[in-house]
Image: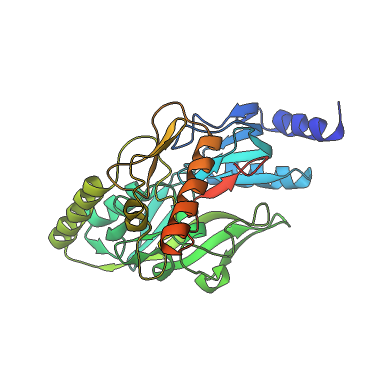
Length: 306
């Protein structure tokens, strides 16, 4: 047995209750796509997460941490190293209209409870997929709202294994991006605190319902990773794809939604290779027809670029 495999086995032995060798990722992916991780760890608390991260680093193993796998295309060949699925879901409400949430907390659950309490500032996220950690890393946003505008602080752990609190400026937020997006094993978000504000409960619930209905009316159900491409400045990726005549186009088991052209649906046992080929097809067509280069919003993860 080589040293790498021995270290993986050692970590699995240290975390026998939450670690699995050759753990299947497709069963956790929003699109139902992806091969196995060399070692899959399912962390159900902040302490599980911190323990798994620091133990992986101490053994020099490559590491990736994910929440709901809602915006990541996992390679058919799987992922080398350790993959941690973050299911640390706890959150609580604090004085001064602040909300503390572990990084595995579900954005929809947190935002809906915020609205129910009549607190403003997170209503835009009532239909947003994914987890708090992913939302921070990706600077998630919708309906004019954005994580960077309400984040008060976050707890992160770095390569030295020490947990520390950081200010929003530390993240260097940009549109749908932060310094942690694509940073791999360098830093992991453990929790976040959001500064919200007093609001009118009845009004917030009405707005939340409007946003929910708009999402239901425009975004398709099924096995999808969400928006495939970022919107180019002054335009919409979905509009461009539809204008290019690509709605409903299929590659293998993955098709472009007929409801919203920026969503790809795995509706026939599709693969990551199918998804990637469809992405290239769309990019080529939109570039040829409109001289616009569409940039993927989803992240490609795996042994080969999925």
